[in-house]
Length: 148
Image 1 (spheres, rainbow, N blue to C red):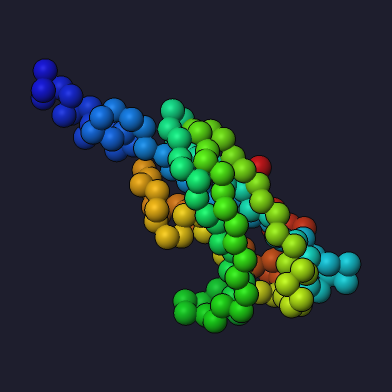
Image 2 (cartoon, rainbow, N blue to C red; image 1 turned 90 degrees about the vertical axis):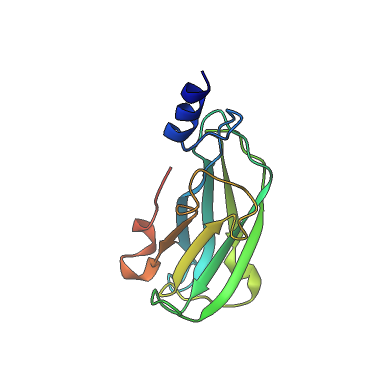
């Protein structure tokens, strides 16, 4: 009987040794809305989902970074973040940030990166899917909506 229980834990990487399902936080949506001039970022919306049914997370954090480009090591020009509520498996939370409130004019040509649980406080089924990125200026902000 012990061998069977061990095999179940090995086969299902999303389960802990005690049979609890491990959560998986994912940035499932990221959208940038332009200001009335169409040149600067007005709002950024990010949707965080716990993809593992039967699991629950503690509260977490999401951070949005505006960078000069998509190149590795590109300079970050602005950060904004917020707390994410505890999420049961299948639940999602959408947060909207008012980029204009920063007093900065962030151009639509900037690279946008959203990352949930950036400090790795929550043990997850996968730590490799906690982020999503877009470059709204490359194809028009209205075409950059992802996720649902």
